[in-house]
Length: 198
Image 1 (cartoon, one colour):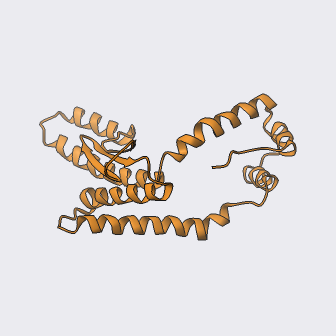
Image 2 (cartoon, helix red, strand yellow):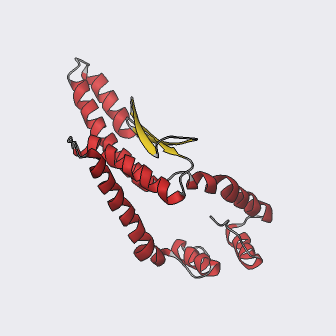
Image 3 (cartoon, rainbow, N blue to C red):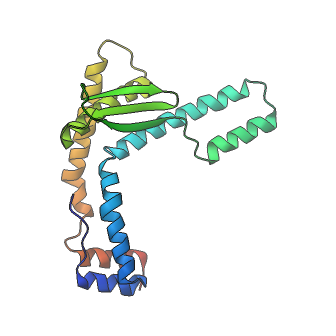
């Protein structure tokens, strides 16, 4: 992934518009390019992972709230727990991606209390990593959301991976160009107009 770079023209415009210094700009560029971008790259299929997590979380929150109503808690305790679960963004289920050195399998899912760890081989190329992770997400969707139980689970997981990656491919091919400006000056002007900053 190429680093974000700014020429002097756009740097001057940013300094004037946002009342920042060269040092401010350089500090954020260094952080973005050196720290954030590598972290973003390691979060394969993050929108897909987050969406699946959220669906399972909402389902598990409902089950938990139904359960606490049957435990003999006082109405105050039930109201407090319900408020915490609904307002504090409690995570009852997490999907964690972990690269594994010298793995024998391309990927596997390990169930843990409160979620799943997807382990994937770090020697895979970028596309293979995405397919392996999407395949494991297919198992999670089938097990936790669709409740599909049969002898065809590997093929169903692969089907899910294919559909998910086709959707991502279609987004980059068909929709992403609508979000791209031709130059950094055009992006700056669009940003300023959208936020009505003068």
